[in-house]
Image 1 (cartoon, rainbow, N blue to C red):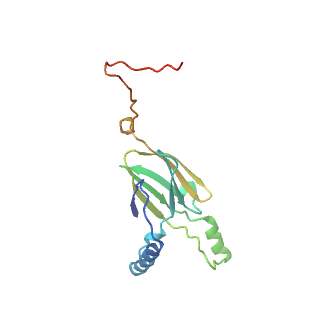
Image 2: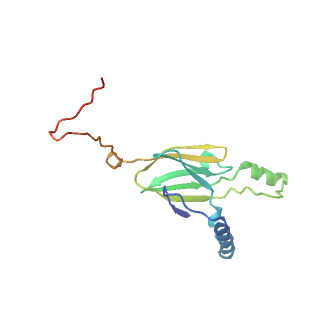
Image 3: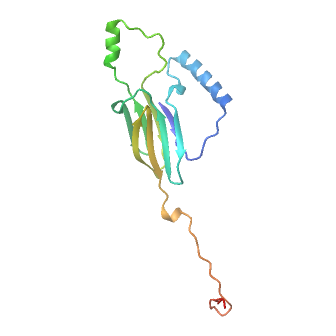
Length: 164
């Protein structure tokens, strides 16, 4: 299970370093037999405005009943568990063999620690993309406030200017 801290501050990435990380991750996975961290689904995070955000997770081939989204103790967990499809069983009976199967559909779990002010508004699955809409609620006392500035003369009266 991959744990990630969910921050509204964008992370810096370096393709050279991330490629090296993926290579090392794959090497250790082959040695230990565990699935690589890089095999977790890719995701995008978009800031629509100051309070509205959108996360899109790539889940090709998954249906709604194979995906689970839950929030417990400010931890968002996205998981997928594929069902054995009848077509795979039929293919084995008919002698159909895969020559290359590049789109893998394996179980996954992604976890993000959320701040207490983040609330998930809705989730949609369309064309292999799971989209989560959420808001970052800022209390009124923490929002910036404008203070009006008035001008007074020494006697305490407000001066007015009349155009003739």
